[in-house]
Length: 225
Image 1: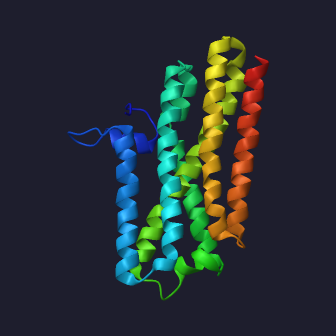
Image 2 (image 1 turned 30 degrees about the vertical axis):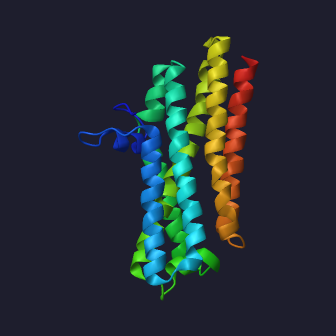
């Protein structure tokens, strides 16, 4: 499922000792495991009001995992230039950008007192297991945001530098990859209703629009040849 140099999520799944699950099984384990824990926490601690947001967030993260797998496979099948492949998969910038997104989220939480789901996460009456699970899922989402940004930016660089040397089939293959990166970012819009009325909602929308502009520019460059 993963090569030695790949995004962190794929390297972790591919490095499980003695067992490499299929992509579909890995996704089922991710959603079922986190979703099951969320259900147990909601039942034991009577936190049912937070369950819909938790399940949507877990679903978005799981869908992101699936799209990461598809994007990685398609890029490798397109026979990418070594410099682009190494920069995208071997630099670990996806993790760095995920950390930056997560720290930005924590900064927002610690310096503001927003209503809704964010307030519930940081509220003084929130049980510790709920906070732990929420922050774990939020980290997962922030990592996907960082990876989407990195894939988008490096994809634009690839198109600017190499598009003229690609044949038509290769350009089309990378157009599909850029569209998948855009979809990877776009699924995060499902989180917006749960953060509506806060700055976080607009930051998610802005993130998706920015990826659309960068990946869209990459597609235009590939179309021009």
